[in-house]
Every structure is written in C-alpha cells, then in structure tokens.
Length: 550
Image 1 (tube, rainbow, N blue to C red):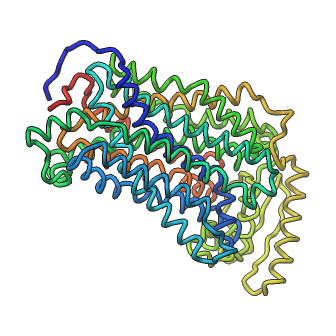
Image 2: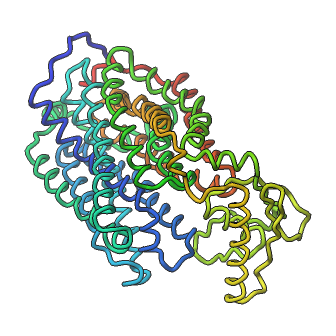
C-alpha cells in the first residue's frame, strides 16, 4: 500500500460522535462479558441445577465459552454484510441482537422452573450474542478508522478499547449495588437478574445514537466508484489475502487475547477461586487497578501513531511471557500468605494409580467421581487447595498426605447412594480438619492482606492489557484493503479473542484441576503469547504509515 505523510488533523465534534457511537457496542460487549463471568457460579446453580457443584460451574463456563465459539461465524456473516451493504447498518443490527440476548438472560426461568429448557435457552442466547459480537467489533473499528485522519488512527481507535473498561466498571458497580442492597440470599435467588435487566437501557441509548450516524466516507466513495467487493469472503480468505489473515491471527490477536483475558479476567478468577478473597474486595481491587491503568489504552494507541503498532503489541506479549508466573506468585503472597506458607510447610500430596484418576470434568453430567483418587481431588478442588501428584501401584486405594500425615481414601463404586454420601462426608471432614491443623486457611485473612502490593500487581497486569489491546484495532484495520476490510479483520480478531482468549478461563481452570498446581493454568497464556511474539516479530509488518483509502 502507498504511504502518506500528511499531518494529523485535530479531533472534531463529528469524530467525537463517531467514536462514542462506535464504542457503545464495546461497552455492551464487556458489560455482558464481566457480568456473566462474575456470576458464573450463580448461573451454574440457576440453570444447571441437575448437576453436581463442580460440573455446574464448569457448564456455566462452557455456556459462557459457547458465545465465543461462534464469534468467528458471526465475523463471516456480518463482516460480509459490512463489506457489501455498509458499516453503519451492519453494526446497528449487531447491537440489537447483542443487547436483546443479554436482557433476555435476566427474564429466563431457572432449571427449577422449566427444567432442561432453561440451559438450552441460555445456550441459544449465548450463541446469538456470540454471532452478533462477531460482527460488532470489526464494524466499530473499521468505522472509526475510516473516519480518522492519517496519523491519528491509533489514538482514535484506542478509545474503543478504553470503553471495554467502562463496560467492566458498569458491571462491577451494578453487581456491587445489587449484592449489597438486597443481601446475599436474595441476590443469589433473584437479585442476580437485575444487572441483566438494566442492560435494556444501555441498548436503547446505543440504538438511538447509532441511528444518527452516517455511513463511512471511504465506503461511500468506494460504493460510488463501483469498487465494492462482490465476494468478500472469497477475496478475504481464498486469495493471497488469506495468508495475511492467518498471520494476523497467530502473530497479533491470539497473544493479545490471552494477555487481555489473563490480566483482567483470569486474575479475578485467581483472586476469588484460588486465593479465596472475598468477592467484593476482589472487585474493588480490580476496579482500582483499572482506574489506574485505563489511560494506558489511549497512551499506547497514541504512541503507536509515533513508533508503530507492532513493537508495542509484541512487547506486551513478551512481558507477559516473562512475568506472569512471578507476578501471580507475588499476588498469592500479598493476598493469602497463609495459603502460601501452609503449602510450603505442609505440602499436600495425592498418591494414586494414575489410571484411576479422572480429570474432574464431566461434560454430560453423568460422572459421580467414585474412585478413590477422584474423591480426594474433588474435595481439594472445592477448597482451592494446591497439591502435587505421586504415583501408586496399579489398583491401590489412593491417599492424601497433608504435611506428612496420610489419610486413606475409599472406593465408592460398590456403595449405594446413601452409603457413598455418608462416607464422603466423613472423609471430607477428616481432610478439612487435617488442612486446618496444617494451617490452610478457609479464606484470605483481611488482616494479613497487603492491599497496596496486590493493587500494584493487578495494575501492572492491566497495563500489559493496555499495551496489547490499545493499538490492535488500528493495526488490524491497516492490514487490509477497504473493499474487504470488515470481513478480513473480523475473523482473526474473533478467532483470537473468541477462541484463544474466550476459552482461557475454562482451559486454565481445567489444567489447575488436573495438576493441582495453582499456577499451572498460566502456561496456556504464556505459551500463546510467546507464539505470537515470535510469529509477529518474524512475519508481520509495521502499518502505521499505510494509506487505508486504497
């Protein structure tokens, strides 16, 4: 593509309107994302009530991930529409579908009320939202970039990324107000619906504002000249352009996604599920970190106009690779030092026949985990206790050693339901007492928490998020020609964020459950971010000076 050296024009009121209207979809996207993620345990109980507790939570995460799974399909459907009929009308459609899907979760009857229909409808709503989201971001980024003057695309599109944090703030505020105004019991029974219902007002405002917009000037010009693509999907993926799409995925968006989700979402999981920090306090810590670091989106977007998109995004990926393990270990020391001390002083070891150990995941809700190894790991997983594994002779009954004190498990296959329940309760009580004696805490002790250090570490993680996410929209827009831009950039973005990023909580949770090491889940984002750094550095070019009118 040709380059241009024209100066950067100032921000106008029209630019402000374009950025604001386009960003509302991102607010909606991340409002729903954090809403559903934060309420995953409650949603599991409400809509998957026929399953055991561990499987409820995993199914809630899978329903969450289902929306991400179909995002690439949405990118193809709505990306094609955006390149055929225009940016404005396409992302007007997407926000209506997206907003309605979020709102309807708030009125959906629970499993107790309508049985299996409840989880089925929930998953359908997640799929619809995922499809709409597949077309939302590409439209917003393309629309803003095609309005932005040369030399300001990184800055202007970075405001879209900033509104993701606004969506998080809105969800945290609404959840906090509901949880603390009606009480925990009422909140878990029906109050959790309120945040979903509130989204209706956000939908009305979003649609009204977008109705006032005009079509992108570059698309209008291209259409007037008869240069629109007749087959955007074919041109995007079944030509030389397909190689750029693949490189954009592996060398940019995959790493960006896992750093994004690792820093802002997995960190929240880690605080609440692993370190047993009170949910309200975890939300406050994340909110403070976001408030401190959110300016980084605009800073790195602006800086990418000066030094380039590539070095900033790849630097964020590299820093994540080098620092994730020490940062999360430091987070444990700051938030729950008693857990760290107990694990060092009285390590927990599960000794079992590996052939008789399941993965603690039941995809069809039928497993009862009655083998001796599974019984132990189920108890430890519920308490968030780190452990290591040792191999026992084939066919032997598993045992758990807590600080050198061994507690034998039992085989439950031959027991009836009542006998198994009674023996499980007795075994769990024995394990819990041994853990307490060894110094393992039930929850993070507020008096022992080093809040400033915890917030500093979380702020660092969010700063990495701003590095990789701030410039990514401009980088993707500039990789592709106008006639197929919407389609071409949407697919790698949503495979990266929908699959590589969206499945991060589930994959990392499963890795931790399988290994017993509370940090082992970090290997997933570290490996993906490392891959992106290498591929991006070797095969992707800098784009900040390209002329996107071509």
